[in-house]
Length: 120
Image (cartoon, rainbow, N blue to C red):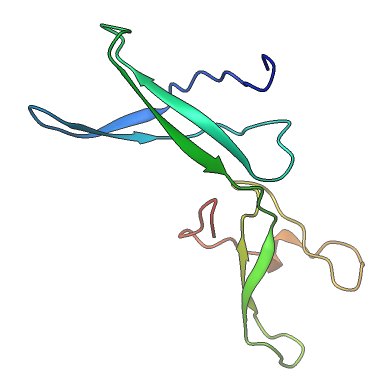
């Protein structure tokens, strides 16, 4: 950080489309560290060929916390499979499931759906 400015080099992007006068770029933002709460950052897109050709925009980095957003079924008998939707959970990661603070369930009792992503 320099004063209130954190400089981060982002090299993870994809050129989504390109025309004569416009380009669409998909930016993979980094894991911003040392942020407390929501924080606004300025992002600068700069031409590698000509640094004088740049554009700047503001982006709000939200301070999100993992949360259960769905469960199905909401109740059942022992042996029931429960599908739980968790938003903003670290991904990809290994997870442990505990019932009443007991030992983690065996891996064969836990599955992460292939459609999972960092958001859900």
